[in-house]
Length: 154
Image (spheres, rainbow, N blue to C red):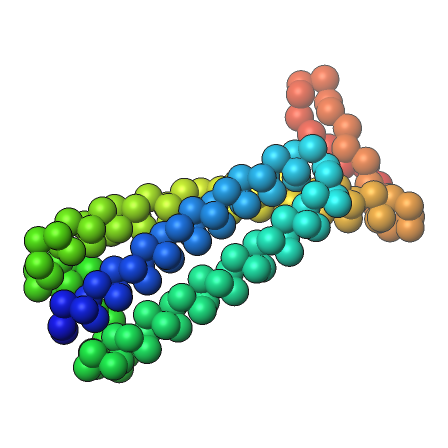
């Protein structure tokens, strides 16, 4: 891989990190909106999330095209560690920083994403139970015995 192509790849990876950090920020805001129950804000943030994900997809497509043009084998991704080994020092340093940033932001996104799923699932369960009660489908009630055990009465 030529130094100019490697520099272009470093730039694309840097853009991808920036976009993923933006996505993380959107997800954190979405989490706050979920907790507050702000439906309008959630809707706006979902639109922003989709927009950022589309941009990530575009950068990823450009990165794959660049790697294909550089002769990387189809289906075999080139790892950043391998690029660091062949890169000039100034690019190797940037690649190392990008590798660390990618790991951190992807881990942070995964954490927030799983945390965002919890209140959504709780809300869905609450809505489901409410609908069942209104529709008369839920004829059971939970009762605690004097020993603290839970029993269901029908």
